[in-house]
Length: 329
Image: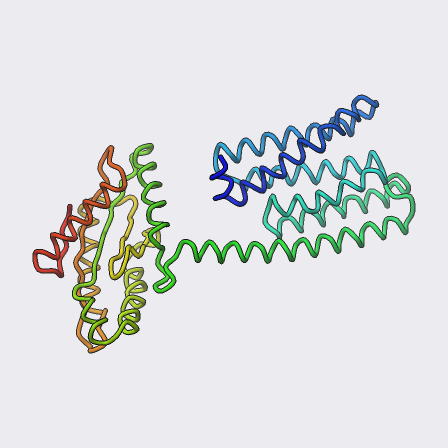
């Protein structure tokens, strides 16, 4: 449980907001019902119930987008209803909601929801003067302070979102080639195993190694070798489907993960890649590079380590047989 919260920022934030709503709003809801203010009391308890439902849904499905949006919409509607019924006393609840919503949905969606919520309060205040705000000056002060808070919350949330995306990119991609890294490969292989076992979805694996790559580093330097590896990725992607994923396995070895592929199509595509690399990928001295490729289709009841090992054994056989060839394992 703790590991899942550490790995999924949005799930952690949604859970935190849900817990805060349950702990802080529930006593007020019970008190409002006890004191006879049934509208606000019911509204408070509805928000608490929706927070519990949304949090549970996020934990069960792993989807935080829909539960977060659902919770944000309920909170905005509930905040407007509470302010209309409690007047000035209800306005204090708007400020924590300004912060909560930015943890539940994207910064732009949160900002739009907050502007809509403030617009509803403003329109109601114009329709029923004195019910929400004690004076026009108080209304103006509230609108200015909440707008300023919303703008700064948006800037902070947007900046934090960009930083999280950059950190995720750095954690999941190879810094040299831009291909996904070994950690991401392990996660995607585990996901492929799960989908194959649950839905019977076919998966294929290519493990390719550039032949005699060490000679480039020895004769021309590591910078020249890095340039060859960097040029390999766009070449591979030009021959693959958009859904196919490329990972750097280590050194000059790369893995291609393909979903919804038949064995014959996997072999045909691998041969296309072998020929394409021989034609278009060149060494610093102008000679053409070649590659050896090992193939493996995912088998029933097979774990990803065994699947990857079969592709590795096929690659070893391809190199043992003379390189520049494709072998299926």
